[in-house]
Amino acid sequence: MERSVRGVQPIDYDPVVDSLFVSVPNRKYEYSIMVGDDLILDFGRIPSSEKQTIVGFELLNASEKFGIDRHLLKNIRRLHAEITIDEKTVKLKLSLVISHRRKERERSKVLEVANLGVPPMVSSINI
Image (cartoon, rainbow, N blue to C red; front, side, top):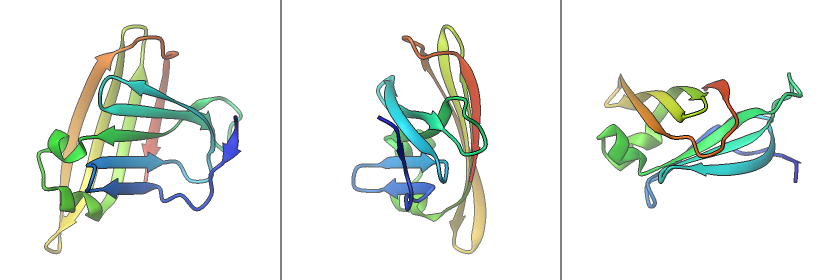
């Protein structure tokens, strides 16, 4: 099922369940795949291309992964994600700029899990 997603915030963090959701604006969502225990990849198409790509992701236990307080993740100012999928692994390189006490601090994390059938591709998201 393909549907256009409008009104969805590009970055949404829920401190209650410790979930970071990132979405490309104006994307056409098609389906999601759970990769490992803590990462869900959203696939679809973006307006500038009809090629299927990663149009978003959800990272569970996000504050634990970054080693920071849950409420700081509500103050993300910028985000860069690189997702590389090859035959054996799915790798997410994620960099965040968080505003805290009038200062911006950068945090980065690399997550790597076994690929259990996701098609190979490379994608990046900048917000």
